[in-house]
Image (cartoon, rainbow, N blue to C red; front, side, top):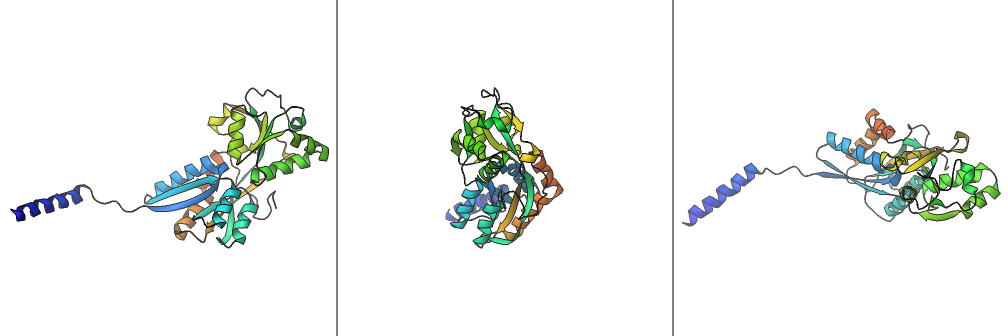
Amino acid sequence: MRKIILLTLLLALLTGCILNPSKPEETQLIIFAASSLTNAFMDLADAFEAQYQEVNVVLNFASSAQLAAQLIEGAQADIYASANQTQMQNVVDAGLVIGRPDIFASNQLTLLVPKDNPAGIARLADLANPSVTLILASPSTPIRVYSDQIIQNYADAAFAETVYRNLASEEANVRQVVTKISLGEGDAGIVYTSDLTPDIAKHVTSIPIPQENNVVASYPIGLLTQGNNPILARDFLLFTLSNEGQAILTNWGFLPKQTPLGTDANT
């Protein structure tokens, strides 16, 4: 009887193996990316996974400064994509980047106001109007650095001082600025043009900043020394630079890569 039971169990195990063959183990590719890249990198990850079906792309979005600090403190990732050179350089200086980072996209800034625009904002100069509730990102973020450059270079010191007196809130990243404006919790904010996504557009109005007052935000991407999959990481980096990758970025409002590393507005 014991032999029959053992044989039955063995057949059951073998049948289970045939009916439920084990799947190849997935390889994780961990990417730290600036919050402004959220939609674009979700699509990039999906397209990359379609080509590398054994790969699971894990995305971590936050402000570039927060991500850089996490990496320097020992967080593990394969790729870092920043919204400016300064935060990428901090990671480079810490010895965490393999080779030289590549510029893979660029961006510009725009004024964002609620759809009903209660403060009547029509141009950059209106940020200095009395009682305007201005929302900006925190000073450590790339979007705030770019915003400060625009505000401080627009007119004179008196204009900048007046604008900053209207500053009501400083958010952790640019997506939080977008959220507050879309909910009507502020009269105006300065964000990237790529932040005007379809789900946000119906709740806000974008007011262009004149080209002569705007800045070009260059986005560098680098391979990290603490990554577990350097070859796969390189493939993803090259994918962001490919025609398909660039088309995805353009679809989400990013401009083509155009500024060599070291010459963006935050140098």
